[in-house]
Image 1 (cartoon, rainbow, N blue to C red):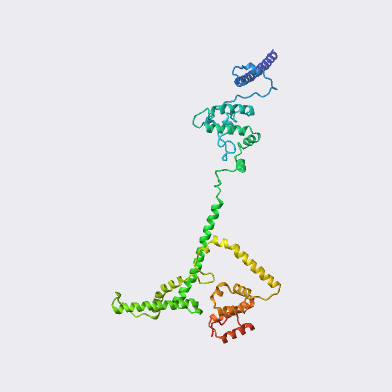
Image 2: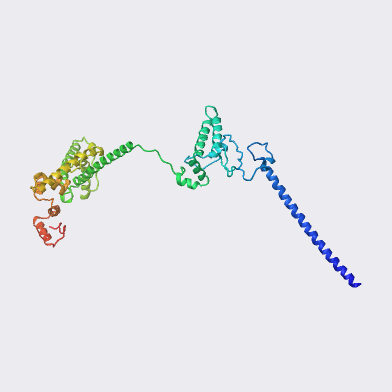
Length: 435
């Protein structure tokens, strides 16, 4: 009896466990079915919304029409929106050099939006159709509104770009690559070309500047010698100290003029016609007397020197011939003359003829320099012509002799120095100031 009761209880327990498992399984199945049903319902609603926008552009198409579409059917065209032509709807594009449509988007100008067409960009037929509609609307002959002409030009430019296969491909490529646009076309923000200058104006400008420069250079050249001559004349410098025959002559004239002025002044004072009174003061030293005399001589010497237009050797007051333009006109003449002379000289040397007087003078002047040639006297020139100074050794020896003369050496001392130099016992310029 007890055994039967235990068996009944264990069977009852197994039955209860099985019942619970089946209940759990059924509940899980109900949850899965409900979830799939909701997901399918949401997908159906989304499909219905898409079906309303699908078709050939007619809103009367129903969901049944879209359900009949086969998977292998061609892609369906997306409905295009036509632009109103307002610049606010023309978008933007990086095109500072205006290679395409400038700062506007070519597609936006013609009423297309690249963000909405997906994988179906507008065809050539659609672009042409939009262009014709917009060009008729904004043609300046039909639309008198302000800015109609500018909009019509922008529409025509967009049509030109998008109907050119290569241009459109390049435009699409640069849409998100402004760095590559910069590499190929550059940026007008960084630089811009200035207008070309007229070459005639530039040449005339440089000729004027060059002429003024050569004119004042010649004036400075003359003024340098004039200042030195005034200083030498005022201070009474000897040839050894830097003076010259001209400065000595000018000083003599200046002293004579100064003496005349002093005499006139003394005569006026003696006759009582002069209003100046002698000022009493301390006795002047010798240096002060000399400086006072220099101050009196300086304006007289300056006036006398300014009367000299040409010091020789090219040191003259400037004239119109010193302008660069005039010199350039003379250059061919000088060049031709020089070439002819040296050609003639070379032919005479090939024929082994003796040097004539003209060749001897030209060679000597070139050797000693134009300034030295003009500065020396006629007797010294004749002596220089006999020394063959165009030979280097002869020129060096002549220059050493001139240095010794300027140093004031006696004839015996000069001979001694020459002998010592030939023996190698003295350097050039040594003992020049010893008597």
